[in-house]
Length: 604
Image (cartoon, rainbow, N blue to C red; front, top):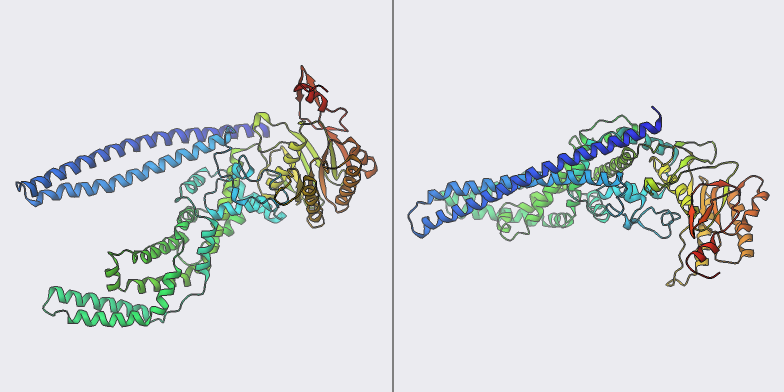
């Protein structure tokens, strides 16, 4: 079986698994919905019966109070059962959504359905805005099946900053291992509730890692003794003839004890006003990972970072949430007297500091490990849903981008035209000419997006790609700024300066320049563009420059083989422009500008 045939079979397999899962989840959801209605109706009937019995008991006095017990117990039991049924119905609904989203991605209906990552947008980034890394229909939205803030942050970081060779290969091995684990990805998708924000996570981690308040070792048993004495005194007052004196003395001793340690307890409880609910999903996610065993070195290392306190991290995080819930219980005015009697705040403060001493330094490690595994799972899901996308070969001998049948990863399959493209020692860069709408800008983004994927450790849309570590620098989507008083030309040359600065660094740059210096006259454009391109080549950079100005193609013969001309063609049929989007060698021989103007009715 050929590789392409195998990929098509894998794609059909993914579609079949998603369709089967969706069918089962939909049926399961309907079953639980019916059960929910039945239990709800039973609750209503039980409540009506309870009301009727209460009337006969307290209204007409024809029934004894004992008749109220069975329907009351029945009503409470139905509440518990209904809660469980609703949870099962919600679980089935989330499973259905998981498979629906997968099918939407397979059918190219995903734009607008996922997380666009708008919070990560940075207009000053050297390529993110140019290559549609974030936003509706972006790379991030296509790949990001992450649900925790840590996982999304990690994935966004990988798309924004290329990794080194060792890291890329480690991620690739992890992606290969995780790719067939659909059940694990489903469990991770179902784990917990929606994630909190990165700000919440940072606040929580700062609290956990701050220096702890030290309580003497005798404080905790002494606090237990104080509480026991108060409860004993209260019991003696209620059930014996001892009177209130024992209780009063115990309460006085307890109050003195609480007052002595108030200066330590109060700051601990105040500092614990942390967004621990943002960890609910992380704890559930960790519970999924803790039961897994891995072989890929990166996954083995991340899994090992979770085994640090002798207890599973998910259990430790659940314990923290319970402690903070107990702290919050003191704000309930009905519980406040009980809390005072039980030395509730002191016990909680001691337990919180004990938790911080044991787990605080490890919290950020757990969160980051869970986030990285979740980000790797997102890449593996992308590989699972696109079996015709291979993992690229990472080379280090020389700057290289050598791709066969490259396609834009964001285009629907039936609209994607693929081309071969190679950049290395000869040529280092391409001067790409062609008519309007012929595919030049799309080709720049095709190269850029596949480079982002490759250097993040993800599969690429190609039949083969050999690539070295590169720093992407793009000037494609340049906008002027009225607020900053910056013209389009000034914005472009500012970006070009950024491109040149990146090219001076290591690893080498991959520059993608669309219509270079088109905001100035032809004479200045040719001189300026030639100087910029030659400087980039001298720094060892690879790249592509598109242009409408065919005078710029004249610098190729003088480049000593470092530059090469390529182009896209078009033809006019019945007043309609047609493009095949196939990259060809040489300089384009005609322009479609006048034909396009005439096709819309302009007399030129």
